[in-house]
Image (cartoon, rainbow, N blue to C red):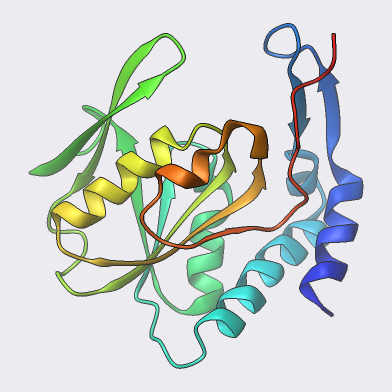
Length: 187
């Protein structure tokens, strides 16, 4: 099965919620994919196939998942690839010495952390999350990876809000599985 075939089938499972979480936003919920084990497997298979095609001669060492929806498929993808999984969490959630990166949110700032000893320097990683919007949280995760001196091969997302231009903030290639939203919901 091709990546495009997987994407087409997965896109049909999304549920749209107009004006959520605020007026003018069309929220595409990808959680229905997880209610169906066959679709969940296809989501993971699609990312696995993409990564095998994109990096045929490069060892991927870790999948890094962003809190919280990157935790939904990141560990399963890591297991399918036979690599480790490392979480990026909000501040104060991880024990031990942590690298920290601040990022802008709609109403202020937040801090991401990753354990400093989680990934050896020089390892190759892929950062995953459900959606890229403004790119702030993904860029913060990239900063964490840079702090521990690992290599970001790619940022992978289920969906992208193109009109927010988040990929422009990222320091490595971006792959989005499902078709992106080109603009906000018309009022």
